[in-house]
Amino acid sequence: MAWLELNLTVRLDDQPAVEAALEDVGALAITLRDADAETPDEQAIFEPGVGETPLWETIELSALFDAGVDRNGLVHVLGELLPALAPDQIAFREVADQDWTRAWMDQFKPMRFGRRLWIYPWNVEPPADPALAIVRLDPGMAFGTGTHPTTALCLEWLDAADLAGRRVIDFGCGSGVLAIAALKLGAAEVAGVDNDPQAITASGDNAERNGVAERLALSLPEAFDDRPAEVFVANILAGPLAELAPRFAACVVPGGALALSGILHGQHEELLVRYGEWFDDLTVAVREDWVRISGRRR
Image (cartoon, rainbow, N blue to C red; front, side, top):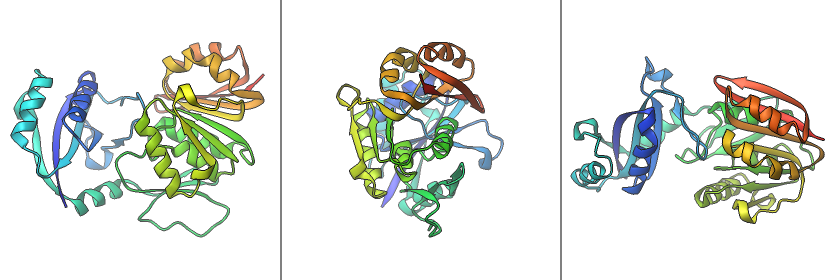
């Protein structure tokens, strides 16, 4: 099967509107890359969680459509949705199915997080080592792979945490990578929460592929089982983290562990004060311009 790929370059401020317009016209998948990278090897792919935005000032945006889509019609509708977008900013190319999949997999290699945890694509056979916790991912477009700093920070924290037999809450579970990793690392059960129904579906599908679906309870924020857990992780944004602090504190048992990410450097000081009302031993880890806060429930 062939696909039609639409490419254009946008400024950071315009990215949310352009991405929304592409979704409105039926894009099957959207990929963001750093347009200012000097070489293709440096042109990292961004896999956003819910509400996350890239740090790059200029973004190369690619959208995938069925091969039979009317190109002129797409340009016309996008022009109506985005009046500032000039038709000559849009480029098309046909992509064979095997080429698209291979290109994606070429970007995605096995990755280690901490001591035991590995993320493996389906096309690479992992070692038969029971000491390792391996999350295997289908090389599709919707599953975060851990390459974003906030996801990596949370995965490393989970690897170092004592999860054996524990209940974990993953608030803002997205496509499920943190929840699945927690289960692979020995958690007894995980409650995955997200405000996007598509994220709930993606998390369920990926949990099935990894054989842990029976221990993952997925729900929207208004319906989730908020019994206090021994471990709580939220990789969302600083604003919601501050707003939901009392609810999050109530979701952690005394002595339980907390990790928060999706925080830009400079936003963490306010959150340290906010969460200091309920948590002790708050510490900060930094990767690139992103921060993880961790602590223990008083």
